[in-house]
Image: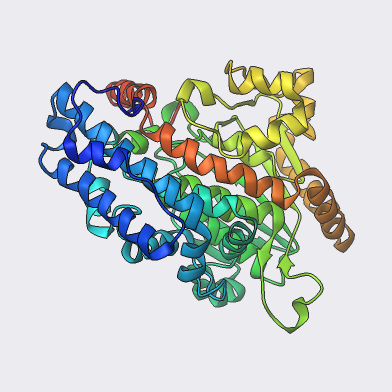
Length: 462
């Protein structure tokens, strides 16, 4: 829901008014008590109301005011004491915490800062339109962590480590050269790792599950010393309209978003700070030989068959070479969906220019592979029956140590890490707000109803 400004409700409770007037001080122990008290007051008021879906307009207004008032205090607290909170949670940056661990630790250790595990579990069981919007408080917390040069850099470094799942599966992949992760198949062919997105139920529309599988696959490709170059491509679909054809990606899974199964931490932030950042900047490693280059980087090729919509186009912006079939197209319909297209707003303008970026992001323009502007985003356009050959040639050409070093320097010049950190800080907050805005909730609800009636795969926008 779109939260009105504080004080616009007709009636504001005494408890809420008290929270609105609260000012966080600079002394941490006192500020911590004030934070907890503000959270308790808001929670107490919310507990007197029905579940979000059953509230009257007046009750919605009361709830909104209570949450806005508490968020004012949380924002003040994080601006003054966010660095101290992060230092405490990470033992002075000596502990690497992934996003879920960090958020859980902050919720448990700093009462009033955000909802705890029990409240979040209840929230995850609701439709998006029926949630309290507790992830907005996670956005407040993570925005301030990422705004800090010290804490933000440490968090991004922590998310660049290999996942536990990838480390567990690495021996098997090195032995067999292939793994089926569920939504992604991974196969080593010669020196190349082939990652094939294979969600036939939704035309490779992404959800929490696919982000998990993609990060695991990217980690494995980067960790395997026999792999020197990687490929990402969509698999063959079973949907009647695309049966037997490869599809790259239909973007975010709108059905999952409607049912409340797209999360801020495990999807929207993990996707950007996790596997996409690893594709772009590499995997962080710590061993005796890493003193000169503490990351594993490899060149990557993307092959687009049929279409790359939304998140699919976002992905292309970090690849070293992008191939496309002549009958394919790209789109990034962020304004139509109502959400922020990840780091697409950061990268698209650099590659395509500001005017084309606005046409694509704000106006919903499709870029067909054969039109002149496609050359700003694609390296090679080939007839569909030549895609396999073009893929093989690209993988062979990029299999070079000099390519690895030069891509690192190109990426450093084009998108400095500090620029990325600052962008992600604001993204954490703005995307959290967008998730609970009325226009997004209305759009995904209408889409899901239409898709159910037409028996179309979730996420398809064609």
